[in-house]
Image 1 (cartoon, rainbow, N blue to C red):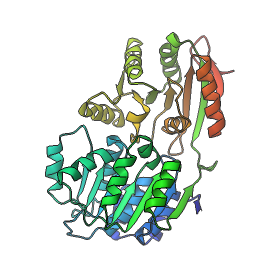
Image 2 (image 1 turned 45 degrees about the vertical axis):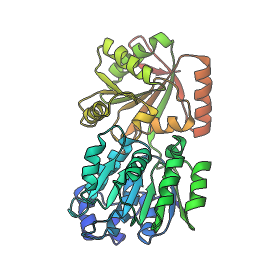
Image 3 (image 1 turned 90 degrees about the vertical axis):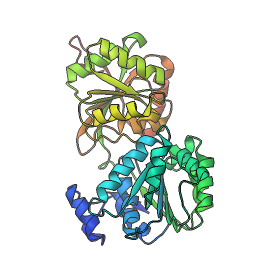
Image 4 (image 1 turned 30 degrees about the vertical axis):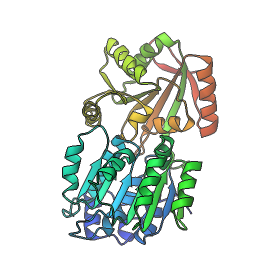
Length: 384
């Protein structure tokens, strides 16, 4: 079933506590993925949802899960799997917002790179909802520090990315152990072969919900290609940021080493920047992300994997410092800007012929119009 618009939350028959939590966040209308997924998941049906990133998928599965929790229960009733610790933490924060008037609902977040002892202590408090990365949940299952005998709902969020990241064996092992499961929700930006395989093996007559990025729903993002020498890329990026007055910028690189170099280049240009990638300790990554979310850090540099789950909806501009290696990465990157009905802008810096060819292929595949541009003498962007 295809959904192009949402409905008012007060028409969905939600509990008073959840409606109060939504009201507190000034949310009255559901997004299409929420309108499509909440009713079948509340009826314990399996769901497979294809929806672009940034469409409110957490509430689409979070609301039915929270409404199914038995008050006072000391059993884990729901497991949500996410590909990265950042996304797991973000899901946990959003679920806690939904539970603000439900103090009896306990949620724990399990991910690698953090002390396992603290997580074991949290599990001893009998959380009803476990949000986890597959690897760390597998660790806890092996240690028998998590009890999943009575799990009723399982959700795979960003299923395509999770299965891309070679978590498929962890995911299938976890699903095989959850014998009491009543429904499985799969949420994905793309329905890859791996996603279809998991659906075929573990779902029963799933409701299929597709949310198309319709023209009227597509974010308003101006996209530019700037051809520039490799050694001039950081200088050109700094010129654009200053000339256009961008105050909140995300920049993407393809490698960990390049994120560090770009951070250093931008600081040499007199701009404040910081970066995250897989080799940076988790505490530092969280601190950098928190600064960016609070608006204290103007330029945030990241690799694609490290940036998953960072949901900031008022980014002025996105820079593809490196042309992404996959079409989907381009869509995820530029989708950080142009949200909440604001106009956004994305710049891709092209320094060699293969990168230019790759960008042409991405534009064709994604249906995006990427205009060629250059800088004038004052550093202002001018379309070619």
